[in-house]
Image (cartoon, rainbow, N blue to C red; front, side, top):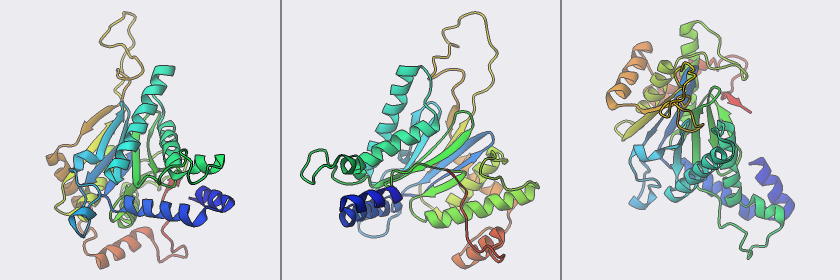
Length: 322
């Protein structure tokens, strides 16, 4: 966003370009809620169908929750929120980047590389390339508008990670993140739950350079519990990514066990979470915290207690990795 502001001010295109980007960010915020949480042994992403208030045309992504989660590579999943067409454009760009890298180098593109490729696509639609090249408003190189979508990319390469890319075209890494409706409240709940989890398990909350100490089961319980608390009866779906199981090396060639750098024994395991396991994860979180946040007033109290906002540092600091 800062880069967009700087370029817009330099080129004298500030009001229109910033207004378009603001509208795109608002469109992404009106989609169904998507939550991602990383763990030491994998990561999970879950989504709910849109519940936008207003006339029928106000719902930006009317599909089922399963249509908000897409597999873009054997090791990467993306959750989307916003305008359907813009979401499909971003998913297509991710898949093209993943396949092009595999065809050229014979291995899977890292999560950070996929996030950069998606940010490049968003920057083209946001007009950064046109602004840098000095294209006029009537020039064909000038895009119509920024993408009105946000993308939450999760996966496992060397370690599990979560990346957020939106209309601002700035990839950011998170330990846990939410996009779409009620994302701000979901972010606060996620951090509260993770800090409470660390306190129950008896380990320190990880710093920026440390790996997440909690297990995938704990991450699943928190992600599903927060989504269920905020979305109620909405249609929900969840997908889990786990590292590949260790495979013993063999001196004999086996066509079925050969790792081609794409789908092979070293590829992470991607699986959808059945409804009964989703409900079991919600019940697991409820059992760990008998009094989870319910109404907004109680939620603010519990969140403040979990984050120790009464201390001298009274600001909610989300865990972002630059």
